[in-house]
Image (cartoon, rainbow, N blue to C red; front, side):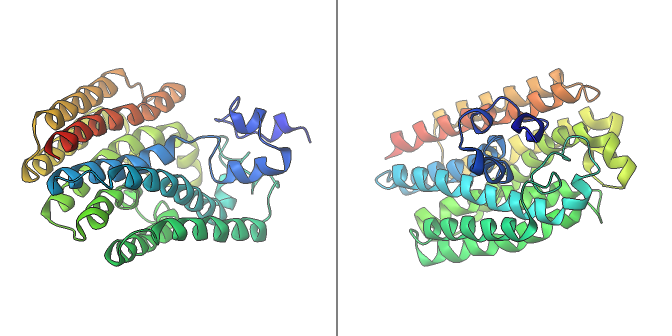
Length: 309
């Protein structure tokens, strides 16, 4: 079987397909290194929290190292989460056009091999986590419960995006745990705002598979909202901006952070206006643009942290 026929359907033409050694490609695809957008989205709340907590502490001496460690951790643990997801969803993935070419249903990687790779990624993630204080280590470990149950949620609830939000927003707590050794109200509100953001963008993502999901009985907010998706996005994106704004106010953030939040909000408005849920390719592009939205907010928070320090 040629490599061209084993590429994941929505991730062709990337460095994994063209430059990675052939033996490594199925594993890199398993951990989604051919589609890093999910790692970036997992990273954004981590970076927001790290910058905001540094601003609260008025100390950026450790911020650079925390940013780098969060980057490594986000990419590794997103890979571990995707590997776990593919193990649990291997039968369902084979029934969906977009996912049937993933490594396990395509026969490129066996389940035991995937499990071994999962353990390897988890150990790397643990090595990153051990660089932090004890409270941050325990906080990070606690997130694994949510990660473990998430793949099963689409079978039992119309709101699996909420559980994904709980997992993908965990970094909003980690920055405070690492920098300040505590999780206060500011961190909790930032976490809630990030959850609302995740629900919004993953609803957009889920519209790619809405028809296939209906055929095999998979639930999602995309199917739940249907034609009302734009209105739902207005609600969740507005809630995200409002809650993140409350977090900035509680943290005593200065004007750069508010400029970043304004740019973030404008980007979310653009997404809603641009979106056509009947165009899967456009849904994917709009979904991916959330990395840029997150970076705009992070830039504002970073400048704010530097100014306050």
